[in-house]
Image (cartoon, rainbow, N blue to C red; front, top):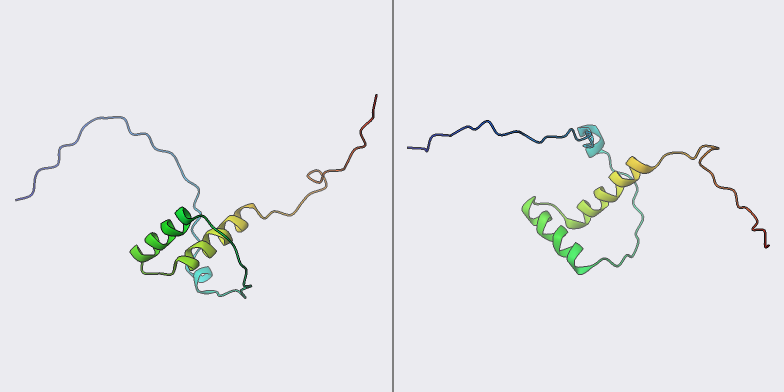
Length: 92
């Protein structure tokens, strides 16, 4: 017999996280790839290999998706207000 669940009235600390998961149609789309060479820390590679094994996928695919998601989140066109102009320093 299973143990009975005991509920308590403890406060729940919850916060809303923005939905960042792509829809299924975006997962099926395959973009043209460009081969690059990059040196990553041993710790990072071990993490991705371990997680990839748990989810039966390739660790390189996980790293590629992570980078693509980062780019999609932060790739916004520059506006005239966000471009910097260089100023000459006045010696004095």
